[in-house]
Length: 543
Image (cartoon, rainbow, N blue to C red; front, side, top):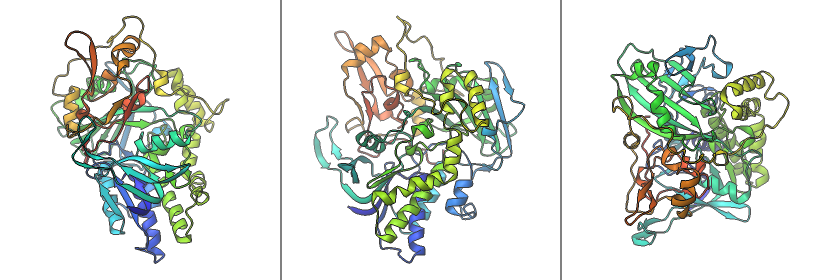
């Protein structure tokens, strides 16, 4: 299947790029001359999109026009009130002021899965082909040139052999392939590794667990935004929480745990359940109903963790390109803006008949001339400041913010998440016991899988690959205590007894919610997340 421009992933960056490109071509009277295709691994656009989210509207204003709301883009609420708390186990102390990085005046609360659904409709009206349920297995690379992607094979048996309905994954050939797969995109990972595109710092991630609750009226006002730091995280781990009131009776709540804290006992899902036991949060959701839930990783490294954004035959956008401003907890507006910039570069190239790497390099030039650079450059050392602990990091990061992004040293280094994990001391295993969930406000991981709507056909090969399973019962058990049993939010990885003695790793791949934490945090880096052949996974549309 040929395409002039192929977009891998139907997130806000790629859909904005497709919209900008198609609109430019239409305005130039060249509508219908070029094939523009978006492929999405989820069965529906929005199914795999999970975000808080408070959105800075600047990106939408600049890329989609100031009438984007009037044209029907869904917005849950305007931010009308906000507080930032420091949590202890029993108290929530509001800060006397809102830190400038968390000032949300003029921002809006959205469900990003709904926003991308609206974007899909807009791009289709301009003639863009959006193909849902089409997982890309890998990029096609010849030398240093990307020429498209291969879709995943279908019809394989659980052991990997070809079944009766086997069909090899189609090759989509493209003049330019744009990777906007979000956090830890699987094709982007392959591309960056093969072509050596990594930034000067490794990427670091947080795992965010989100829930949507219907609560009794009168507890919170529509448009209220809360953020918190502190309990239940130890000072050694970066992270915090949010609560966004989408209406007077519907709240989006969530907790993000950084993955470079070093403790092999860290459990992001359990951290979220503990946080909900805090009096402020339990008082908010008690007597309410959990509507949906999910888990996703967030790229936190920022500017110095950016991979090279362009090359012969490709561009990398949005979260795949490390454009989240972690200081502001914002990434939608930068993703959208990156899409607009990419769309303009692609339109220029198509209209002039030149899509060479030299032309695509204009994307980086445009990015550095945009507000994306201004924001990310000021926050370029933000995340690194917290490697010495949250308390000292807050002081260090705040001072750098005031001084334009650095104090003495520039660039501050950081260790990758897997490299930061420390071996357990002696028999100190499962030292942090999870509290039993009450089934009313706190829940076990399998309930979380159900709330995510995650479904996979079990008659297929596992899309979670462990290169050397002998490590699991041996070296990993003794050195780290099998941390995948805890850091996975969906109980995918389970050490089970073997008849006759011993233990082995059991992979419950049908539970997977596609967060990619395992691919990131496995201390031996032998776990690889790949796309399932059935386009399965969570259904976050509306969350």
